[in-house]
Image (cartoon, rainbow, N blue to C red; front, side, top):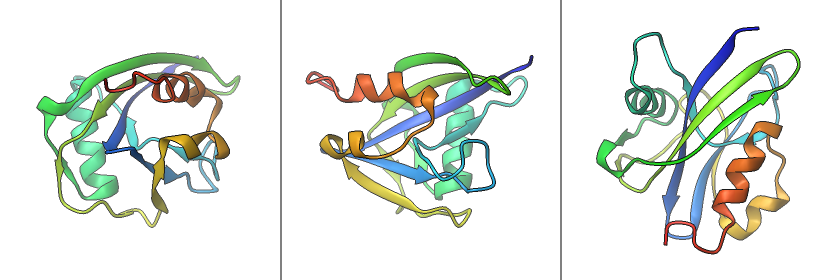
Length: 134
């Protein structure tokens, strides 16, 4: 089975994280996620993240603020993913759901109350650590 490589951004503003709601027709639809998308052949991960966030949220990120957080490999049975996750704190523009997806700033303490795809569990564990971004 082919592994889908995905660049993921944990966009941080103080104690809040920006989330996107997956379209109900998508794999794992109706669940919250950290924005990002597929890495194209020959594309660097941070470049893919910048492209995806510009397409999905209409923001331009400061690539120098992207810090590797975690790599997650997950098998859903019907699909395998490899998530390269970065935190970032600097961007230009006001995030908006350019693909008609709902977006929301959520306090870190509230993340545990939302439904995420299973592959996001290790990401949540990192974000909820007391020393996150310390």
